[in-house]
Amino acid sequence: MSMITEIGHGLDGLDQLRAFIASGKRPGIGDSLDFDLVEVGDGFAVFEGMPGPHAYNPMGVVHGGYFATLLDSACGCAVHSRLTAQQAYTSLELKVAFHKAMTRDSGRIRAEGRLRSIGRRVAFAEASLLDAEGRLYGSATSTLLVFDR
View 1: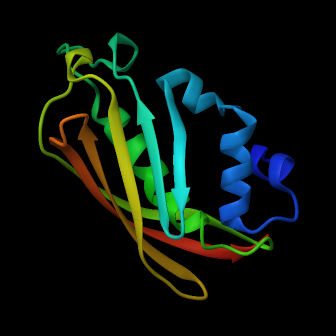
View 2: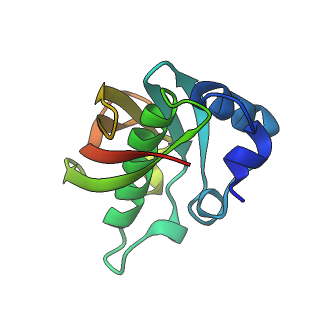
């Protein structure tokens, strides 16, 4: 069973995400990469994380997978916020652009996801990865499959 359905069984997507935030729980990926879902709204989701050596590649900067994970999470939860209690989603495609290298000196990072459109089977979302001063580190567009549980 998923953490979301455990915490928010019977709730629509937005209320599931709100219940998840209120629970203070973190999935394994959040523990591994040190990031959290911190804000949700209608078609909107925000994750924040602290990049550090745990996310570094051999060149001494944050690995692109860290960028992609936060951006994918933000896009996915922006879509999740518009689902019914009977729906779920999965990413079909994620296109990531890397705008600036990141290190632990970049400080707290914020991935802001926004739903662009949602249909019966497919949704489209986009996300930006920003530091506290609003500098853009990465961006993504995502196509997601919406399905019945």
